[in-house]
Image 1 (tube, rainbow, N blue to C red):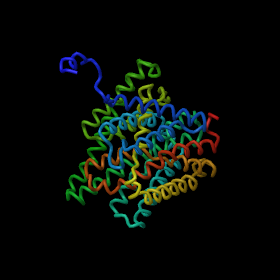
Image 2: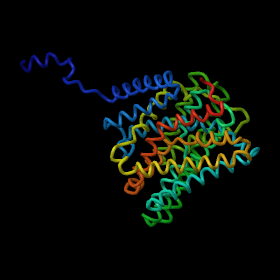
Image 3: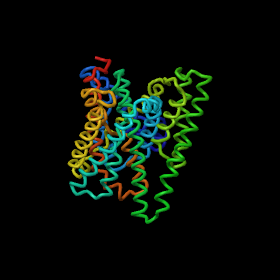
Image 4: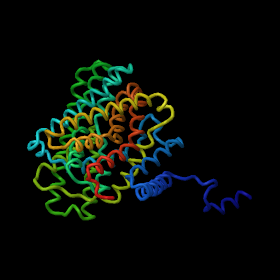
Length: 405
């Protein structure tokens, strides 16, 4: 064929065809949606197990995070999805409950402190550097807000264990961000030799995040006086406001975890009435949440498992034991039976997206130090991304708070 003939067929696609990002993202959504529906209908498991399984397959094909760090495109999806889930989580936490039942706060502080101590001491026992052990322990204090919110919503769960699971998840996510930033402050002093930076950085982050969160809560409250936020158009408006706040948060180098969580908390506790939103703020939010689970399911790699699998398994056991011990021991003073306390401890097992964000934030500041954590944290996340949702469902069913049979 001559050059002129080829130019005459310019409208035909190149061969072989080159798929773009849109194809891969849409294919991932379709496959994850189908597999999620299959595990739900066939095995009565949470759909997120199917989503995470697709992430595991993606990683096996060498297309996932590969046990190193979040790619910018992945980080954007994770931030967007977690912002929606954390805002929804915060708006369900009534802090007045802590005043009427102070043992809830004691339980929250105890389970977080015991978790930190157990993971830290376990890693020290196996010869891990103290600074690495402290960083891992701080990150693993957090329970996955994504798993907790999704499973509770999907199975229409309600009751004492469900509400306490949501409360403790919100609080220990807050503690984990605080602890991880204090670890970064310590690293500023140890690695950079700057005490000013070690104090100024955490203070800026906490104060700035609180200000942006307060502005978001005020704007949502203002709009809610005139619009019904439960209808489709208003839900899109709310989604846009959260994404706008997230954009400001990222531009100002603030915490993408703290801002939506604090905004939801401020909104919920500014009034006596509960706030009711469409689940994940509609279809767009649902797609983001699906992709979140696919991404967090893709964190494992053979190299990362070879390096950190044993320590990852050890910290999973230590973390589970600490959280369960706290919820069982303090369950009766706070109004729970032993059975409910055990279920609550099991329900706090998951870790996923929030841990990845804290890892990514640490990698942005001290990448060489963060690399020492990758094998441990990513191995634990890879395991609990699949096991965690099943544990939450089993815990809620154990105390008859799972309303879908």
